[in-house]
Image 1 (cartoon, rainbow, N blue to C red):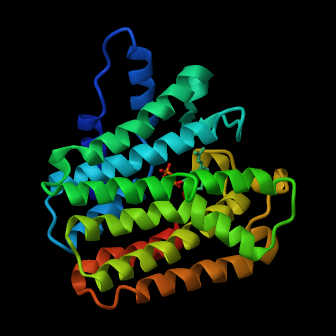
Image 2: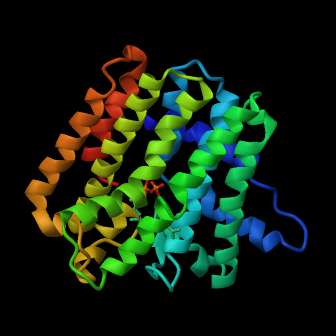
Length: 289
Ligand code: GRG
């Protein structure tokens, strides 16, 4: 299901990332290393599938999917830095600061972050400047202090506290679900969709984003480093509060499945063109990587 769209997202990214040349070539090489050649491309998949519901052309969808994957790749590069998670392995290969160096990793993340907004703002993404502006502003909200970056700060703050389930859910909505929600909303923005269609896609993204994070925490608790392509068992080792640490494995799994089911219910107003989004909900909670 994901393979075809992952290949298309990879191709789009390859074409849209700058080529490696000039005295800054080390930066460009690190950006390409971080963004290409790995990852499930799940966020890109949501962009493509939400856009398909409204007949958006593939070129535009490839640009928006690439923008979201650039933001995601930057967040992984910065998350892996010694000042944050200090990880050596990501997507089955050395993290960017290991393959290059810390300064280059910081700059590569910065380069990917800004490239994402440049891609959305360019006329090739959509002929209507209001649509481009809305994509930029919604992605900024999802990835900045009110979304992913804010969630990451809460994650760090909670290492020294004992948050309850409400706080953990808020953190996960910001850190993980906000970017997934934007990916699902993007097709509706590009397609000038009705308010109800847009709300349904956002609700799907929010529920599935939370299910995705719980599934990720379950993989961290139960998976193997070699299979995941990143370090496993880190949450427990660091005493990190997650839905798994609060609920235990079985209840956390039941919660992830329930959220995935609720996500699918939000798609009721769409016909069979939403079937891949329906299937993705099952994938998100049963995945092994
Ligand atoms: C450092 C600004 C900043 C933000 C960091 C995304 C993030 C916030 C941290 C990465 C660590 C983490 C466990 C985040 C939760 C989201 C998540 C599960 C990311 C991994 O996403 P996948 O599984 O990765 O989709 P691939 O490699 O398949 O793209």
